[in-house]
Length: 440
Image (cartoon, rainbow, N blue to C red; front, side, top):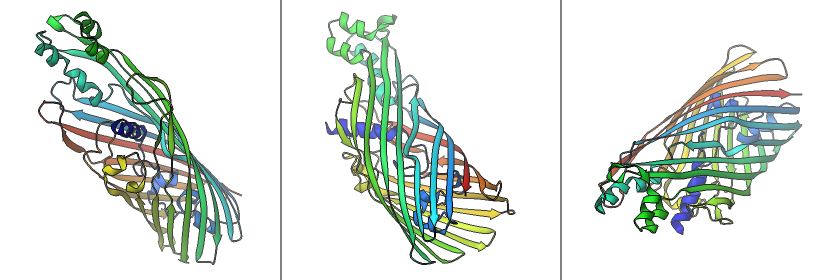
């Protein structure tokens, strides 16, 4: 049962982690982030997410922002198990809509703000060939049958798997300026989580004696109903839902006009998901089963420094308390907590246009037992760039693009009495973002 629970939790994590951030959490919450990558000391409308306390530095009045990202990620698993038909298992993540909305009302020393966005997940991952861990048991059928005295050289199978995950966040903040240099923020975020899984394993065929036949029909004909049940068509159609709350505390220090320093702490989000299963022929999604899939606590720090009025340097640091989250035991496979370190520069070409670029390092500390084809995280280096245009005194446009360079991960696995084999995980991500900001 413990293995099944961990597998379900890992599938919930698998559904999508295409973006910058921790194992579950998305940090790419604005087009400004995509073009700069170090956004924790933001003094714009997206500070609703990155620096709530700093919202008191906005001009009095309303500030609105609506941003969207188009994200494309390609995942490849290369599995050298000798009996597989093809070692390459491609997966695709396509996210055409990844919206963020921010609204701030600032008056004197007080700012009240609201934010909405996909704080985790946000799209779907599809493996048209399934995953090697699903196929390996079927690839051994020719060896099994040959050992039973029925010469068999090959097999075919139709496997496909698709997971979709969206954790929508609704955030409310209250920010107050204690002085010109010190501001505090308190807020909370409600998370509504939905995961869906659809997949099948069907049409298993073998060629005993050189003639292609249904594996199910063949095993039934020779009086082997147990093997027949193993190769029978199977389907999965399941949904998981749950909700949780994240308390948020923030601090913004502006000792001079040129310097901003920020701290933010997001508490662990206790998140319990419940299976709502239509079909579960593989026994992985018991209907009504509840399990924990927390979003870990995050400690964030930010720095913004104006080297000269037109040139600003930014730095951000995020530390994820993964080992303290409850993932039904999967958190025990975390050797070191995840951290992110980012640097960015932005330069005002003139009063209308600002250009920017940034670099982000995401470092995971996961044990080899955590990393498998169902769920794996890859340490990455991200580069982003873009621009901001002031269309008029009230309206501005943010445009940014991000590319993620992942470090391939290779490990050795075993299956039964077969010799050890290598598995390599690869990934690449491209993100394009655009956003409108309006104040009145």
